[in-house]
Length: 317
Image (spheres, helix red, strand yellow):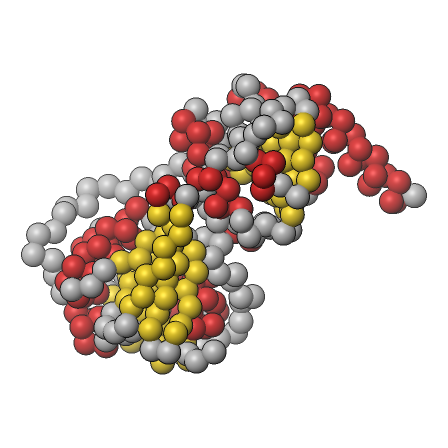
């Protein structure tokens, strides 16, 4: 497959978009990374495979305050494609960069391919119920890409060119008064090989312990549907799978008490094997599952945990 000359990649932290650097390598001859304020991130970017790192200087600034500097850099260097790691703040940055460049943004990208000089972006529309292809024939193309679309590469002892960019002060700058850490969990579902997903079939928050026991027996990560994370707040937002959440490609995905709405299932279409447990034989999840069990999860999970543990004991014997 033909490649374009250069792709640019950015996000809030290099640790969050190492997969985009790896994905960029499949599409371009070289990958340039843009980091803000902290030039120390350059080493991390090179370890993830970057060929060049642009450092936009500044202290005690909000991410949005770097946009004029970024606009100036894009206008000068004229990259063909800019990949941005999806987050609320990067959506805002992407919109402002696109408006300044007179172009658009492909959001919620699930795949990127090349067709000659054209860039083809595939993304979800109508809440994940359909896919749309968008084509960029020339000029700057911006794409917001979430986790799980590209597989990260193992760290390497890489190095490259570090370029200090010019700082362009914003016309109106917000005053930063204080920084506070956001409560959350450090979990990389996109890299998990086994995942147990929980839905509203679970009656109470205390019952999460049962699902956690199953995940522990399997050596799997815990995940959930959007209502669990953003409705009843039983699990962290980082564990939500779906259209605007994590996109998974595990070897096994075990869906427990999940109805199977398309907004959730688009997040696990990359799973090699989907196993579903639901007490409703007509649940949509069974249309997607490779294996399905119609049963009450409160009866099925304890038995399944015992069987897994028994199998492990027998293997040791």
